[in-house]
Image (cartoon, rainbow over all chains, first blue to last red; front, side, top):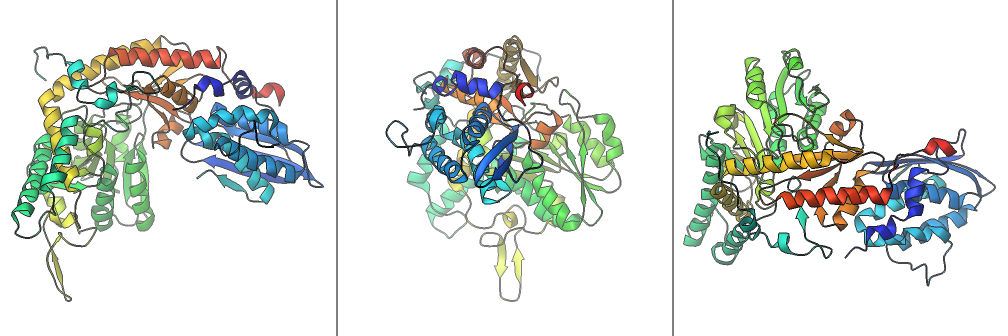
Length: 150
Length: 423
């Protein structure tokens, strides 16, 4: 049975949905990707500037549900200034956490306040919403221009 | 409809036919407001199908065994029930398919490929489901034909003034939904079909959302093709119907080949059955057809006119209650609509609404409803949609309104995005 959605829709997520950080587009940028979740229509455009293996700046645009927008907002804040390999590790850990394969209480991780999204694992239909920004980041870092959760 | 008052439905009694409705859901009462996605099957339908599977099953139209003959009889009796349900002239005009989507693809692939040529126009309404858009786009691409669209206004009413000009001599076919799955609009089909026929245009009707709410009479409508799905009509998935006019069906080529649809096969030449057989290659979904027949019996026993009156009461009450909620906007306000209620909440995405409603035991659909052009027309990414059936009552509506208020509470009063502030 799903846990109370109030555990997921905490104030931080509601607040990041209302006032997303790093919203916009970097022009010019060194890396970019468009993400989409075809089943629900969420769309995300990610632009990054990477220099010497480090994410110097990152912005996102698009529209989606609160989980998607808050995930993108918190992700951009978390990876800014990080090395590319570190961001990739975080993407992998985030993906495993929302699928219930990583328990941030016991498993080593770099997720910090991103563990707020742990509750998504109890809403299987919403896992793709939380993962979309990370899947798009992964594509951008790999030089692929399109990411899809399908 | 007759002037005398209809006896109200005994919803408490009806609900006893649906165990799901009295089984706790997330520890709360279940409020199933998603019949436009799929209707629930009453026990009578499930038991009829189970009885067939246990005691009557074999293949149909095969061999001389008593068992096969009896299975064939039950299967064909279900076809007769569909014929009567649509008031079609003959069972030969009732083709079994997997559902509305397959029915519409059958028309596009069989009639369409034989009749649409380069430069032709295919006219569709602005409120079609993807199933009455994509098969025509595929055909248009193959034949170098084009798609034209009848626009609708902000209420979700088709702009009938535009119809005449759109019915150019190039238009060969008009695809139109009887009832919009997003907006609930009931289109004035009789008028539209008459206008199309005056220009020699064949009309293909998507009836998926109409059959649960409206007594359909294909002869009175004068529809050329009429498609619907069993599972929207309290029947099972995997079975659907295509009705077609005799003259059209007889001229159409088969679209799938195989067993059951032939008169004789040799290496030199194969001859096909007439309709409906020539469109029914392979072993059909037999239990599902019989189950659909049982669903029609069940609905007829309640009475389609009483169902329509009950749903109308629920829709009016729900419209009134939801309009009291600040920041809620109903999408689709056509007069006389069917019991489908789409809405958006300021600054709150329908998927978040759907997840929270779900936890409150209120089952609705949140998304684009396979009608992305409708979303684009209303400049919204998605809606939350409640749909009401004969087993719903006013308590279901109250639960919906209360759950929407919970969503607003979780998201706070001022939910709108304000990304500009920090950009």
